[in-house]
Length: 325
Image (cartoon, rainbow, N blue to C red; front, side):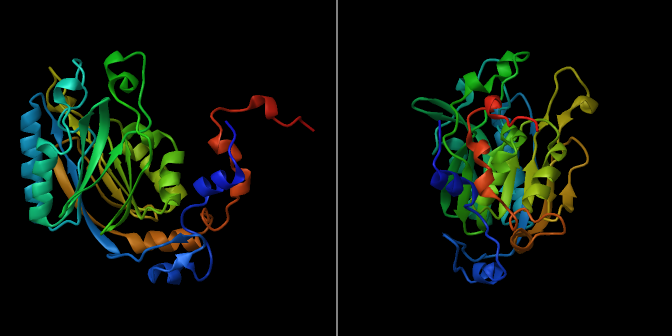
């Protein structure tokens, strides 16, 4: 499939733009280039990283999460972030017995907590729709549901058939950019984060904070790279998985972290245990770095979108490689 120059430029140059006056204009909410950059309502956000343990009892997982959310609410966070599918995980019997509609029990209960605490909440669940099930992040504010992100890059490993997301879930149709009262958020889920195009496009689409929710793995293996190449703060939250027949030392997962746009680790879970962390991140710092660049990181000031056509091709074109000179 071929794309027009206009389509490519729309995808690849739709975010922060680079000029000496751009930062001042952005702070005033004026148009910069062909996009309007809204002013930040709050330059600094308090973020709660809700690292919860997934046990066999799904309803107990939800109850503990709601209790943890209300406890974290005493710290007055602006945003609480829970992991991907945190109450369910991956079950050998499939997702159907655990999928919920939205609105549904989980979304209503978390919406009540968001209203009580006056904060935004992001949490993962299997969402039931007419045509199947999505791996979903629900974004809630004090006034209710803001939006839903459906995982776009579905994991598959033939060695572990029950983890084949391509059979479990419907693929999401779009990336997770959302404008909120806190600023613009870019949401993505677990395997999405293995693809560098995802955090880059979320950033180009105007995100002020990346939110990466995981079910497993080591988020700090990838998170610093996403921050380095996109000059944007990132919160990554992983669940803790209870392993059958193993003592506490056998529990896996964790590693949730909050990183500033300059790569500084603001807070990080050092043990695979159920806990929540509170950190404060500066969104204005990220905007300034993306507009001005940092040392060799002028990724948004010196760009050549006219050369990036290969990014939107469906597969590599080896037959178009230039001849060696």
